[in-house]
Length: 71
Image (cartoon, rainbow, N blue to C red; front, side):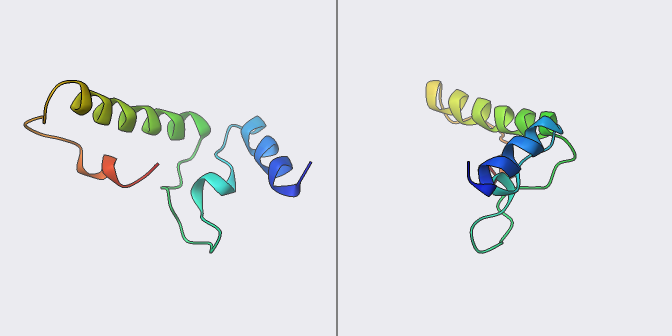
């Protein structure tokens, strides 16, 4: 296994998001650093729900603006 995969497995077992889920290859932050893996996954699900509802129905009257920017 590569060091990146081992790091991801260690982070997930510690209930936190792996480094590669938060930072890109240049080291720039691509996702908010959330304290726990559960919070990261909840945020991901909320973003998916917003986009999926928009896709399946129509443009909503209001939307979660920051939900468009982070994975």
